[in-house]
Image (cartoon, rainbow, N blue to C red; front, side):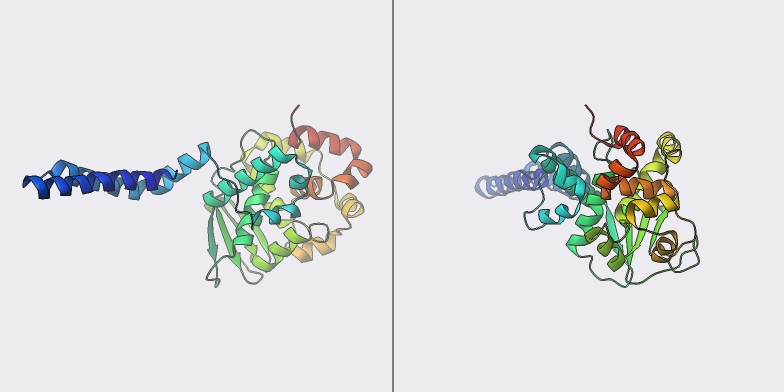
Length: 271
């Protein structure tokens, strides 16, 4: 049962009992009225923390109408039933842990939230810690945007000081729906966040990163097209390599078998 709702129900029963006793006996039972009201106010204030504590121990599954969105993620499709259930639960937790903000967007569509959370769930699925530190904010624009860090129009950015990831909404969604046609921006930025939080892991993968000709041969994503697509002149080749491990698995196995083995050792299932 929802612990917040259960607490409200319990306190409500105590308050009702106090009111009934006061009415029937003529004596004021303030302890049964005032103390539960104070406790209920405390639960109301702490309800987000209480629900998060509850969800971490008993993570619910996603609603059935949203779960099919996860079929866009290759990792999810390859998992067994137990793995799929765990992926959906982690996606739920990551969605609840993330704050979504729209720039000139009144309401963030539920499918966008699921795609973002599933991206985070993917990059850390086989790692001990799947929550990505303080990177809990997503900012979405309707168009390409400039920022103080990058004074050019672009569609994807990791902003470390604020723990934020910034995307152009329709470009992000398209990359999630067609990850073999467009570089998956969800995996790209959450991959960068994971590499930033784990410098040793970053150092290990930097030595394995593909260069632009290798990336193009493996995925058909050319250097010029990638830079025009994101809108920045300097891209993170290590993060792109990580993305292709998830979206172009079979090609990497054939064209870069040693790279795939090394990536799989670090990012794949543990024996």
